[in-house]
Length: 286
Image 1: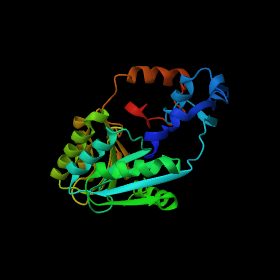
Image 2: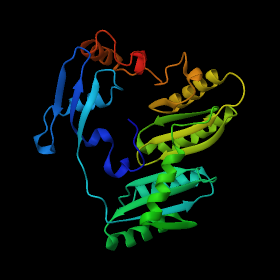
Image 3: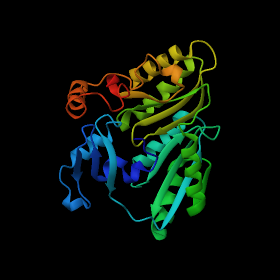
């Protein structure tokens, strides 16, 4: 499952999942985990189901760890001259004592910039925001509470999987310390294909990159495959998040075949030997 920018501070759904109930093609129902963290057993099985794209069973209920809402939030937006400067600013924030719940580099506003989200008690956030402003170096804007939350909602909406008829969304990931090189290499490589990049979002602290590409001319499917190959050569993992169905035919949208594919196939054969659930939709056309 996808996760938004706040995964930096709170983790992903997988990290918060503590219990699950699953229905299987043979009619059996299985339970794993529990209702509270201290009573959880079989902790890895819920994560297996969560990451299987519905190929092992149908999730009919799930239990999640919940966290209190923060009392206050402040976001700092910084305008940067280009991608290298934005990545450098994010690197300074990441290497500081600050603990942002989101830290992103993006061109979604028309130019390159950095966005930092800080959450917690009002008395601690004032000094944290000032420290982030000092590290940003350059023009900055501060948003508080409702304005901050609204900006991040709009930012997430820009990465929506609902795309135009000539657009595709791709994702790549590396170790966090390699994210700057990934971002610069990806932008250069895709630009060499002659493709427009309406959106580039980099989570430097997590080593993640999302790019929206526009393919207007030529063999769109072949161009998409080439863009995926370029990202795959630069990253530990690359995949197509969304694209027109015709473009995806004949390519594995999950990118390079993982070393664990044989194990994944063994699990598929054990849980769904008749291949009833989501056949051909997952890694290696499982």
